[in-house]
Length: 59
Image (cartoon, rainbow, N blue to C red; front, side):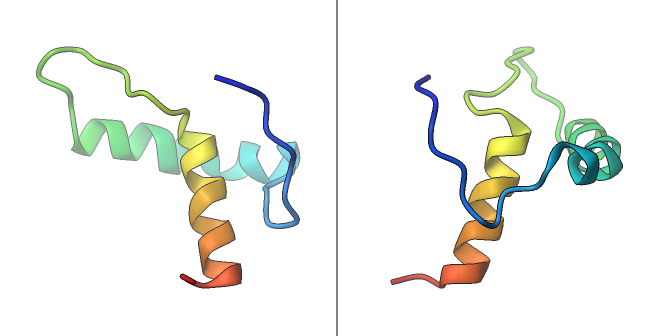
């Protein structure tokens, strides 16, 4: 995966450290993979995408 440029809506490391347990652990516990697949995208990148879309809207 290529490195992307950060957006204004991206969480800094300090804020990510506060939510990583709730977001990543809770989500994976509630939605276990039958095959053991870990997912194509990092949970942090998914959260960044949601925050970006929330800020800019769906054009």
